[in-house]
Image (cartoon, rainbow, N blue to C red; front, side, top):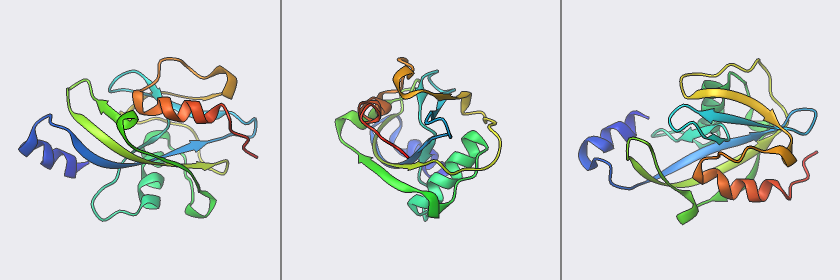
Length: 152
């Protein structure tokens, strides 16, 4: 995230294009792990911005570990979908504006214990038919797709 901080020194709150990677992590009951974010208090999937030089796999593995305490492995990840466009436009509470190209992975294989970091107010597994309604804007598209998922 140092890269974004450097950019912001030059462009302030103006929109920037950012590659983000996240993961839909399912438990043995078929519930999906969501994170209540500390920046806006809204729910979404664990994930975040790619650092310079990182691969998409390195990004999602790092972000999931930082935000949830869980370890995921590249060999267990499948690309779920790539999201972009106006639906991935987000304005943070500090007025920083982003357009994400969001690469979302899916897995049901993980290890470790849930423990959030400063970016997570809460981490919880949800039934797909009981997802929260207070969600971050980039996650709205994902929620539509989650209603049609059949993950084994």
